[in-house]
Length: 223
Length: 79
Image (tube, rainbow over the protein chains, first blue to last red):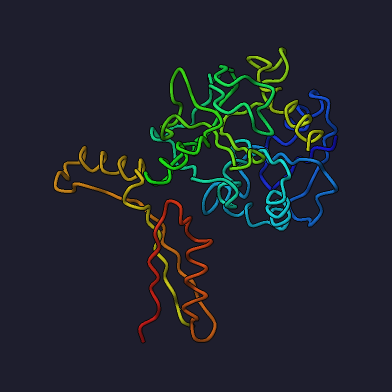
């Protein structure tokens, strides 16, 4: 199972994301933002970091890179796509996910282990969890506050588009404690916390993050 | 060369923690008459030939601003 991991200029967590794919049993495939080549991957991960130095807006310039045009087209055809942290920002900027990520309400960079409640256990990236399950993965961001206009937020909640929610404290002032959202068809998921940093006992607070990467392997087989 | 200015501001319903931090500093400096600060971005574009308003509006609304959370004001040359 070939899972692509895109590297943008300023990506930081592409190596950890590839490692998480490997530990889950997939074959990570390095993808370059400047190419028009998805290399026949079965799913794509957009990693964390600071693509283009967060210039203009976090994720704004990466969302308009050559490879993202291919990702957007393939996602509309059902390709599973996961955006983590900066990757989530890129997916919102690319219009694949609703809402936007803005400066943390307290203006501080926040780095800690974070409890999340899995709200949707039926997406391509969360099917190995149980709905309502609490997991612990690291969160680390300065522009992670999920925002949307009130009417859009109400619609999202009504459609059950919140994939994961912060519990035990909201690290950045995200509206409705939203940590991650899903596309309507459950194939595209974005979240600010970092499941790829919680895949091994030696280096993470838990191995709770592995489920994102094992889930997609089954989703690809089922499709 | 014609100069086009684009101002980008957060929509009124989106809270602006940076503006609030500036407001807090103003209060500490004794400027109690300022009741609100909204922080935005200011772009200055030099354009060859006659500015194409439709194209510039598209640039402003699809790249310079994120229409999910921001509004744009396009200022075309007046001369």
